[in-house]
Image 1 (cartoon, rainbow, N blue to C red):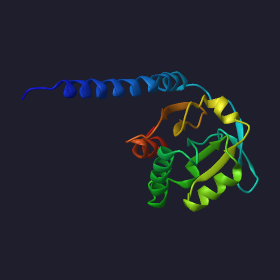
Image 2: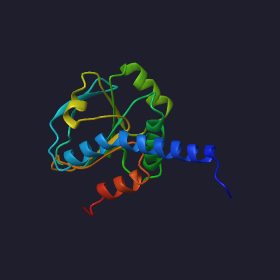
Image 3: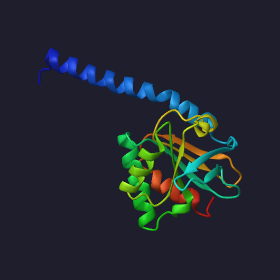
Length: 172
């Protein structure tokens, strides 16, 4: 079969676009690899009931997911975490979803609408973003009992639930 100029052009365009989008992800991948193993600098966020939650939690493993109400991939990722909590694969107290830079009332309304079973917090002062070097959403961190980052990832993770379940188990 003979390739036309249009076929070659469309193939090059597709390869170029894929390369461009992968290149855009490189800074996040580099930042995540650099932060793994570091101790999390303490920060505070607010829960809906007005309580302040100081993180990282001392002596407890936790999965922290940064999200935004307007973020499509965040909706998918948090729905997966929520299903894992509902199904008993993960414990609600081990998952903390933090929204930063958004109006708290919007965040609480979305969390209720989506029936999130885990802790949802807001960080209007961006303390968490500075402490954990958050570059985008969804961004997930596994924080060990000794307050070190054992894993950091950005975007949808095909293995995020499996990885969280393994991290939170007593196996590591």
